[in-house]
Image (cartoon, rainbow, N blue to C red):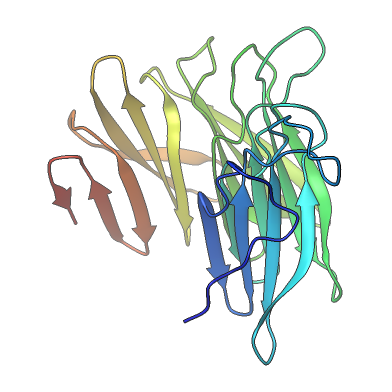
Length: 239
């Protein structure tokens, strides 16, 4: 058992509110972390990267840039690829469009490869993120006002990053995402109505197409592994 000790992390940073581990790397998010080294309370956020050597060692620290970025709101790492959600980023002319940063390990450190940006007010791009080996990432944009939510799939093809955005009329579509093999799991949790549903999408070789839609249930958490889905509810759990 190893307990990560926060470094360059201030009070109320919520260090550990997002975590992911794969082989020798572990990512720990602190989305409310303040500016380092000044300590100015800006909620820029940060992500600490640990590597398993003889023990777990902090090897890299990444930080948000602007106040209320919420850098590290969600994180995922698989193999040598990682994705970091930054849903609080404000772009010119808007608020909370959000972003997600995809990184690849170059043998020394994790280096940014591409950044996916939200386009509409309150998109909250990067609210949820997931990635699989070979650099296929899924990014949730549950606040997209034009479609009630969306997900963006980002894939590395011949050294280029290609995106596909999938929209759905379900409220807050993209509030949860996961990916395993050639399937994507996307949740739509409607806080206002206290209900929701989840969707399974499959890669047909050209596009991601909807394969299954659940009945209305209160989706609180989701996990996908192969053909198995775990659905967490506040009143029950289904597998």
